[in-house]
Length: 133
Length: 385
Image 1 (cartoon, rainbow over the protein chains, first blue to last red):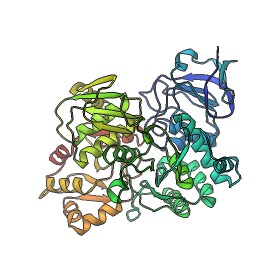
Image 2 (image 1 turned 30 degrees about the horizontal axis):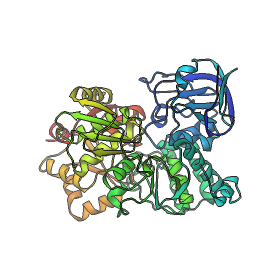
Image 3 (image 1 turned 30 degrees about the vertical axis):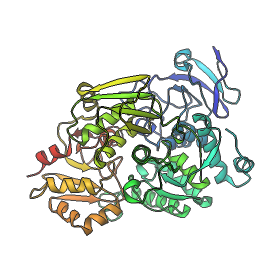
Image 4 (image 1 turned 135 degrees about the horizontal axis):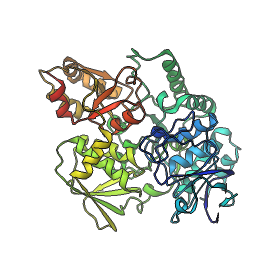
């Protein structure tokens, strides 16, 4: 699998196992910033960790303070290696800009269905590409 | 997004690390929202003040950021963790971390407003004025009711606007984005403010675009109804504005009693609670007035916390409203609000009673206590004598 033409939101590159969610995430309310674990029992990724993964999800929702959670994840060593959004939002973009987490998005396309859960992928935000390794 | 030569220089770090970080944030959100340029904004309202929301990493970030950062425009801030005059039950560690956060913001030159309802505390700028509001209920309220323009900013994007005086021109800052593409058709009797909060939560959860049209709820709202609706929308989604009425839209989504009941089932996780909290958003004079008339001659049977801003509390004291509510057993908590409050923890309470959809969401998910979600009238009926 190789996807090109992604929009660069935050530059850089990262590699990890894809953690794919069809549901949006409220970072303030659903993420343990110390471990990277998703703590909301109703979320499809409940119990999974964001640490070192390539997080593939639609966009962040809810609290504006969610932006700080990306920074806290970086500080605690639990940050994702890269992020792929369907459409990047202000919370994700601003938080990742400060936490130096590469982010791309693919508005109008379907990254959620074209990236397999658990596949090892590399995101190069500067080149706008996502590829299996 | 095109940057001017001066903006480029700042992004490259030629004007210091603070502005470089701020422009990195603005560049990223500019890309995300498809902005073509940055524009001046007049006022920033920053979130991320309560220690429970930003944690130790946030404390360290602000401590370092504030050594160089100075606000370029008027900047107000969201509630902090607790009422500075009521530190009972707040741990020494929490108080220390909270003090560090407040010190950092003050060093930057913000107004220590500690409110999530700037629209009730300050004179608001003219219609059409561009601002950067991170507090979601304030962004939705200001866009929808006051015609002030802001995107649903994040804590860090509003901070970036605060030190640069700028924001990307996109989404709700443009007429195009303020024009809803989706309509929610409400088809049930609105009985109280809680119903507006539920509809807001449903709308936020359902709508992906920056704005939504709400049909079937009339063409004007009281301030408490508008606050409940704005807070509901801001809690569950990314939508930052609503319009009232029934414009022609591509998509129309039905919202009836059944849909509202599903949200109550999701948020109301207990039948009863050990403590009552009013607020989120912080109560204004209208809500305090209603609560005072409902509780006249009665007394709360359980602890009842009333969250409001210091400014509103001062006014309530002056006009005798605060005294009436205290007589009924209400405890005023200023500077802070229900969401992620350190006053309510799993160690001291199993569950809370609240009329706020936003409070219910964060009490369940962040404070990890049960929630009995009831409207204000019902709470007074069941919990006073």
